[in-house]
Image (cartoon, rainbow, N blue to C red; front, top):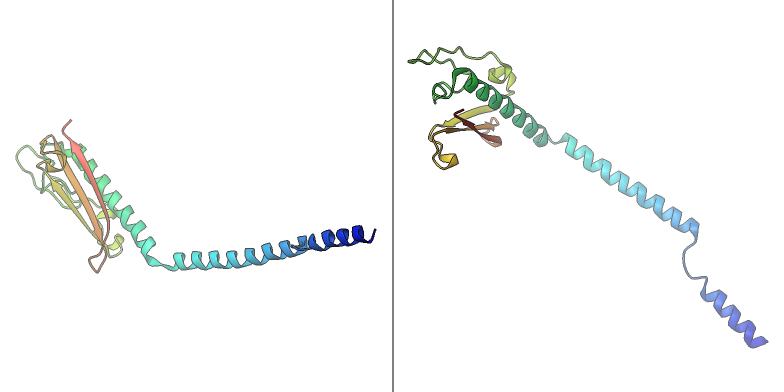
Length: 161
């Protein structure tokens, strides 16, 4: 019987290696506190960074200008949608059968509401962007910051329909 007692005591003693439920819960709580601290630090750093905010604003300004340009095409028609007449932020004089167009007063055209960004629209009338098809004209709107860094660029094609 003494051999059986020794064997049982070894089984019980060897089974006591491991972690208790209290130790596991304490570990989870400590790791949770550390992870939440790291995550809040990252979110504060991202929120304080001006670059994502600038890129979002630049993209919005580019989209507004692109929508104005595409609306100008609907007003003047494809034939009058040319390099000197496509941007609604500049006035266009009467030219042949093309009507005169005043400069738009939309906030996307106003330097006071573009927050120091430079918005540069470019029209490619040759259709090179679509394989040289002259039934298309391609528009590129680029937004740069005060230092000349390009923050956003949108491209679109308008069709002769």
